[in-house]
Amino acid sequence: MSKIELTAFDLAQRFAGTSEVPDQASNPQILAMLRLDEKFPEGDHVPWCSAFMNYVAWLLRLPRSKSLSARSWLGVGRGVSLEEAEVGFDVVILKRGSGPQPGPTVLNAPGHVGLFAGRDGSNVLILGGNQADAVNVSPFPSSRLLGVRRLLD
Image (cartoon, rainbow, N blue to C red):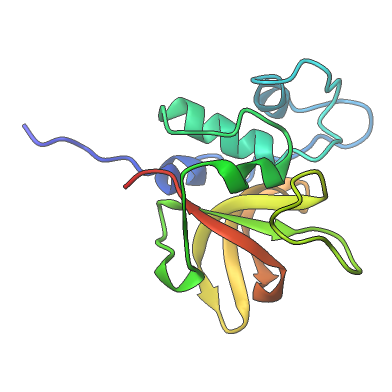
Protein backbone atom coordinates (compact mmCIF):
# COMPACT_ATOMS: atom_id res chain seq x y z
CA MET A 1 0.00 0.00 0.00
CA SER A 2 1.43 3.40 -0.93
CA LYS A 3 1.55 6.28 1.52
CA ILE A 4 -0.26 9.47 0.50
CA GLU A 5 1.76 12.63 1.14
CA LEU A 6 -0.36 15.69 1.85
CA THR A 7 1.50 18.99 1.79
CA ALA A 8 0.47 22.14 3.62
CA PHE A 9 -0.31 23.64 0.20
CA ASP A 10 -2.59 20.70 -0.70
CA LEU A 11 -4.53 21.10 2.53
CA ALA A 12 -4.67 24.90 2.35
CA GLN A 13 -6.18 24.70 -1.14
CA ARG A 14 -9.14 22.86 0.34
CA PHE A 15 -10.02 26.07 2.19
CA ALA A 16 -9.97 28.24 -0.96
CA GLY A 17 -12.99 30.50 -0.99
CA THR A 18 -13.44 30.47 2.79
CA SER A 19 -14.27 34.09 3.53
CA GLU A 20 -15.42 36.53 6.13
CA VAL A 21 -19.14 37.03 6.55
CA PRO A 22 -20.31 40.59 5.81
CA ASP A 23 -21.70 42.86 8.53
CA GLN A 24 -21.77 41.72 12.17
CA ALA A 25 -21.77 37.95 11.66
CA SER A 26 -18.56 35.89 11.58
CA ASN A 27 -17.56 32.75 9.72
CA PRO A 28 -17.34 29.95 12.33
CA GLN A 29 -14.46 28.31 10.43
CA ILE A 30 -12.38 31.48 10.66
CA LEU A 31 -13.30 31.89 14.34
CA ALA A 32 -12.02 28.35 14.96
CA MET A 33 -8.73 29.30 13.28
CA LEU A 34 -8.44 32.50 15.31
CA ARG A 35 -9.21 30.80 18.61
CA LEU A 36 -6.82 27.88 18.16
CA ASP A 37 -4.13 29.83 20.03
CA GLU A 38 -5.82 33.03 21.22
CA LYS A 39 -9.13 33.53 23.02
CA PHE A 40 -9.75 37.25 22.43
CA PRO A 41 -10.99 37.56 18.83
CA GLU A 42 -14.72 38.00 18.97
CA GLY A 43 -15.16 38.13 15.21
CA ASP A 44 -13.47 37.45 11.91
CA HIS A 45 -12.93 41.14 11.12
CA VAL A 46 -9.36 41.07 12.45
CA PRO A 47 -6.17 40.05 10.63
CA TRP A 48 -6.33 36.26 10.38
CA CYS A 49 -3.55 35.27 7.95
CA SER A 50 -1.41 33.83 10.76
CA ALA A 51 -4.43 32.07 12.25
CA PHE A 52 -4.98 30.36 8.90
CA MET A 53 -1.33 29.28 8.69
CA ASN A 54 -1.36 28.01 12.27
CA TYR A 55 -4.55 26.06 11.59
CA VAL A 56 -3.12 24.35 8.49
CA ALA A 57 0.14 23.57 10.31
CA TRP A 58 -1.75 22.28 13.36
CA LEU A 59 -3.90 19.95 11.23
CA LEU A 60 -0.74 18.48 9.67
CA ARG A 61 1.26 18.48 12.93
CA LEU A 62 3.85 20.80 11.42
CA PRO A 63 5.88 23.37 13.35
CA ARG A 64 3.87 26.55 13.85
CA SER A 65 4.14 29.95 15.50
CA LYS A 66 1.13 29.67 17.86
CA SER A 67 0.63 33.43 17.43
CA LEU A 68 -1.76 35.66 15.48
CA SER A 69 1.20 37.86 14.51
CA ALA A 70 2.30 37.22 10.91
CA ARG A 71 5.90 38.09 11.70
CA SER A 72 5.99 35.39 14.39
CA TRP A 73 6.54 32.95 11.50
CA LEU A 74 10.03 34.41 11.00
CA GLY A 75 11.10 32.20 13.91
CA VAL A 76 9.54 28.94 12.69
CA GLY A 77 11.48 26.36 10.68
CA ARG A 78 14.61 27.32 8.79
CA GLY A 79 15.20 30.26 6.50
CA VAL A 80 15.61 29.72 2.76
CA SER A 81 15.98 32.20 -0.08
CA LEU A 82 13.12 33.10 -2.38
CA GLU A 83 15.04 31.35 -5.17
CA GLU A 84 15.02 28.12 -3.11
CA ALA A 85 11.33 28.39 -2.15
CA GLU A 86 9.21 25.36 -3.00
CA VAL A 87 5.47 25.31 -3.65
CA GLY A 88 3.79 23.11 -1.09
CA PHE A 89 6.39 23.43 1.62
CA ASP A 90 7.49 26.98 2.31
CA VAL A 91 5.96 29.89 4.21
CA VAL A 92 6.42 33.47 3.01
CA ILE A 93 6.39 36.43 5.39
CA LEU A 94 5.84 39.94 4.04
CA LYS A 95 5.74 43.52 5.26
CA ARG A 96 2.19 44.90 5.45
CA GLY A 97 1.01 48.43 4.95
CA SER A 98 2.23 51.41 3.04
CA GLY A 99 5.23 53.50 3.89
CA PRO A 100 8.47 52.42 5.50
CA GLN A 101 8.33 49.22 7.52
CA PRO A 102 10.93 47.67 9.80
CA GLY A 103 12.95 44.70 8.63
CA PRO A 104 12.73 41.04 9.66
CA THR A 105 14.41 41.52 13.04
CA VAL A 106 11.36 43.46 14.27
CA LEU A 107 8.62 40.97 15.08
CA ASN A 108 6.16 43.42 16.65
CA ALA A 109 5.12 45.15 13.41
CA PRO A 110 2.52 44.62 10.70
CA GLY A 111 3.03 41.68 8.39
CA HIS A 112 1.38 39.07 6.22
CA VAL A 113 2.01 35.34 5.97
CA GLY A 114 0.99 32.56 3.62
CA LEU A 115 2.25 29.61 1.62
CA PHE A 116 4.56 30.07 -1.33
CA ALA A 117 2.57 29.48 -4.54
CA GLY A 118 5.18 30.55 -7.10
CA ARG A 119 6.41 33.72 -8.75
CA ASP A 120 4.94 35.94 -11.43
CA GLY A 121 7.44 38.50 -12.67
CA SER A 122 8.36 40.74 -9.76
CA ASN A 123 5.55 39.32 -7.61
CA VAL A 124 5.51 36.41 -5.22
CA LEU A 125 2.28 34.37 -5.29
CA ILE A 126 0.87 33.44 -1.90
CA LEU A 127 -1.87 31.01 -0.92
CA GLY A 128 -3.13 32.49 2.31
CA GLY A 129 -5.98 33.61 4.47
CA ASN A 130 -7.29 37.16 4.85
CA GLN A 131 -6.35 38.04 1.29
CA ALA A 132 -9.26 40.27 0.26
CA ASP A 133 -11.00 38.76 3.33
CA ALA A 134 -10.77 35.20 1.96
CA VAL A 135 -8.47 32.23 1.35
CA ASN A 136 -7.01 32.47 -2.15
CA VAL A 137 -3.83 32.84 -4.17
CA SER A 138 -2.80 36.48 -4.57
CA PRO A 139 0.26 38.30 -5.94
CA PHE A 140 2.40 40.51 -3.70
CA PRO A 141 5.44 42.61 -4.67
CA SER A 142 8.66 40.71 -3.91
CA SER A 143 9.98 43.98 -2.47
CA ARG A 144 7.77 43.36 0.59
CA LEU A 145 9.51 40.05 1.37
CA LEU A 146 10.76 39.63 4.94
CA GLY A 147 11.60 35.95 4.77
CA VAL A 148 10.86 32.46 3.51
CA ARG A 149 10.74 29.62 6.04
CA ARG A 150 10.86 25.88 5.39
CA LEU A 151 8.84 24.05 8.04
CA LEU A 152 10.33 20.61 7.36
CA ASP A 153 13.58 19.39 5.86
